[in-house]
Image (cartoon, rainbow, N blue to C red; front, side, top):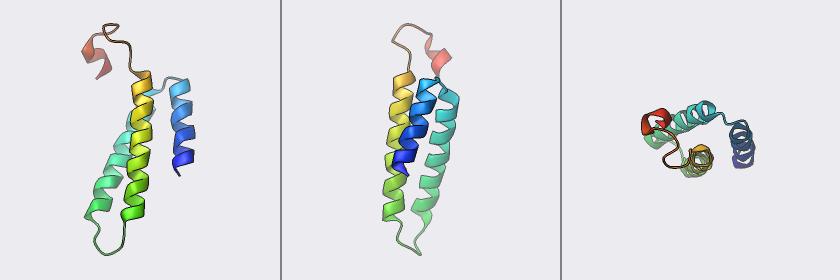
Length: 77
């Protein structure tokens, strides 16, 4: 899934769709929280995959961050 995630993130970065990336990030963080609550099965590989995808999405968001001083801080957050 990480290669698919990279492709999706790359597409969103290319069209500068920050909101879509933020939605993906929120979904992955929620999934990560739910996976951490599971104790009946082994989830280490799934946890690692989701953590890797979160890192990919965060890197995409960093690419879209405006240069310092170009926008007021509240315009970005």
